[in-house]
Image (cartoon, rainbow, N blue to C red; front, side, top):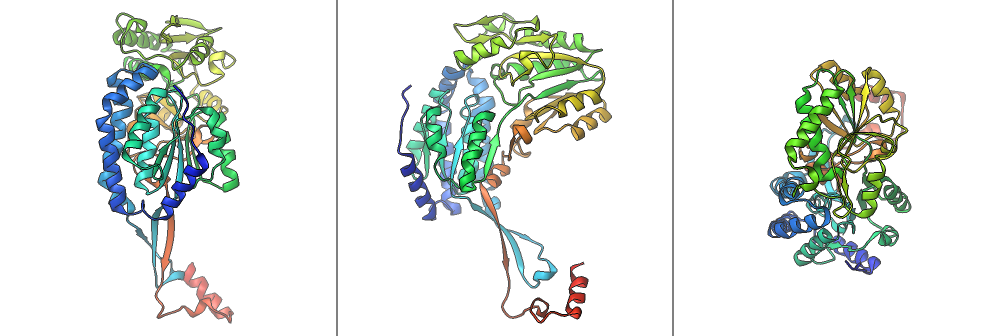
Length: 461
């Protein structure tokens, strides 16, 4: 697909001018725009499904379950709750400011940049877009060119629905990033890898632009001796084969209590047999790795480990069989980086405290999971381990909730979104104190005195 170039400074300037015309700020404008964009998504479901199949090999059900359906639900929530979200919130006024009325008023930042990743190309572009629109901003979208068919459909949808001064799509590749990041935005929302995330953060510094970074990391899954192993195996296997492992919150590796390790491996293997009776490489609904470079990278990560199951590949279709690896240490290639593929390293453990200490010595992951029925152990992991979010006795599904925030911590990113949290992310929460003019507190004005100080101490404490 050819790269489409544009005059970025001109586009950004027009979007800033359009924002300052106040056109995007009213409830009526935002509601109408959200409804129009939602209708466009629904009208283009088939085109989006076809594009995601071409880019990643995802069949319609997986594309709807993990991308289109989630975005439509996000639109529905924003449309239903927009008036409430926009309403200024009245809060307690302190004694020092009495009489008066204190409010928190959500206001749009202005012109925002949303840069998204290729692994969920539609969902990771449009979920933040919903919140940015609901918050009243103008928006520049930069989808990943590694999913070119999906990028083209999204661009066509946006261009048909709105003028470029409101929402525009940059259909370019990574070579556009330097020019893109040189522009002045009022907010930047980035989803992707750490290397580009750091560049985004550096680019924001000269303008003191606030940033959300949704990165990734090696998300652990801990399975203790009290877990329901059959359920753990089935859900863990699903979390690994979803999008062929190309999921930022996929369980990257599993720490399994040594007493149930072989049972867990058997349960994962049985689940894979039930998912793909003829084998994943012969299945019509098994996705492929995004490109040849990533295919070769993931294949290379198997070196030095024992393949308990799987290991077969098809270079022509860029598919890698779901693979269970053992005899893995933190010096193994597969433990040196986020896998982003259908490989599951399984490591034994004996002492949960040692596992927690070890994991806390590594970069903070975007997600963490635990299968257990032992509440003290669950409490120990959830309270002591530092991670973005996660599940107990399941994997990945916390991402689908619009009532809890999604985001990383430390090395896995900063900021959060989904549901109202996306609206909040793209809104400046402006504080405002309104005071009458008929009265003043004499304590605030000179001359100061010990008596006034004594009264102040009493009032404020």
